[in-house]
Amino acid sequence: MAKELKGLTKRSENYSQWYNELVVKADLAEQSAVRGCMVIKPYGYAIWEKIQRQLDDMFKATGHVNAYFPLLIPKSFLSREAEHVKGFAKECAVVTHYRLKSSEDGKSVIVDPAAKLEEELIIRPTSETIIWSTYKNWIHSYRDLPILCNQWANVFRWEMRTRLFLRTAEFLWQEGHTAHATREEAETEAVKMLNLYADFAENFMAVPVVKGVKSETERFAGALETYTIEAMMQDGKALQSGTSHFLGQNFAKAFDVQFLDKNNKLDYVWATSWGVSTRLMGALIMTHSDDNGLVLPPKLAPIQVVIIPIYKNEEQLHTIDDKAEAIATNLRKMGLSVKYDNSDNRRPGFKFADYELKGVPVRLVIGARDLENGTIEVLRRDTLEKESVSIEGIEDRVKALLDDIQNNMFVKAKTYRDERTINVDTYDEFKEKIEEGGFLMAHWDGTPETEAKIKEETKATIRCIPLDGDTTPGVDMITGKPSARRVMFARAY
Image (tube, rainbow, N blue to C red; front, top):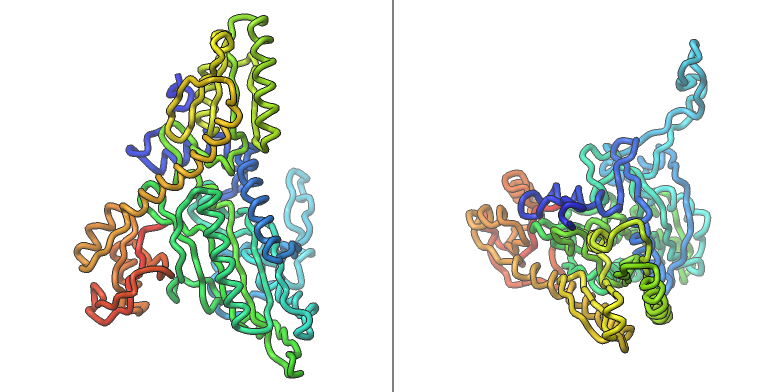
């Protein structure tokens, strides 16, 4: 019955198709009428809300505050920082007019040529330029620093090939933009936010990540250094799951943001920016889910526990209702999100399949016979193991089970990643192993030419130079030139 309801392609048969089907069938998102843009459905948005709420609390605990900046950016702003415009020029959507009018035959609307903007506007692909033009008005003295702002927003990048959550033209994200009096403060901030992202990924998403620094060619446009967390999906590909950038004084110089320091001397402000997006939804799905549907970590599941009654008549249902509602109330008092589904529009088997598809971590099933025996059936979604246990003390048992599921999901994902992370020393071995997927740790001579050759010939990129990686010197696997340490290669989304 579950298979009939879900009809998911198996991961082993077609991983990409499995992912696309799961996003739609689990009611997370769907394609919209606008090319490359998605509709995030209520269940999918509920997961994003939990991600957003937790991250927002973590940001505020480290002294950051929320603000909001305009969606539209004057085109001239992008040209202020050369590397920035070079990095985003091909993805920009441009607003050229501000009015429509009816066509001569009255059957359609057309752009009014008389309403051409004096300066064209860019729909924000990222907000560094508009924010730093604003910071110029806020910053005059060292007493005005640091500024630790974050905004929750949407951005638009004209992507040619899109996939729900992983790469869409419009997506939701947060972007932090901070201003500092010294280089050291800004660099410390960039690393702090990298560590915060890693903490969130591992302790809430149950997704193990590698923290590292991007190569020069993979840096954010306009940054002096880009830090990243990289996660491995079940097909062995990498997914960049969050980035934090040390921007130096580039944007301060572009927008002439100077301040008087403690010695009464003018200096340019030091900057960072950092962000994660709805791409985290893709990471959550592809790290944990299986051929039966979503597998959600309890800390981010919209529904942590579902209770389903089994009954033959209304009298039995009323009896079960009393006990089930009492359990649900006690679980809610423990801070858990619970749904008691006693609706009569679907048979129990379809409910089982649906909640399994949606990744609800714990399912409780209670029937008339269970009430007589003082038992209840418990199923954990991560392993699909079920057992009949005493109904006495079920609340504490469920709470402990959710903690165990959260931990087990992380351990399982980390074990998988570690087993598929290997050292390679020759280019022939590299080309063979990259076809199998996974993270390949290899020596690199540090040149963009070698990096480009590997990318062109294998479609693998340097995902990062790990902060805690192997620093044993060696030689580049292609050129034989000296290499200071191993870096991490993978094919990626």
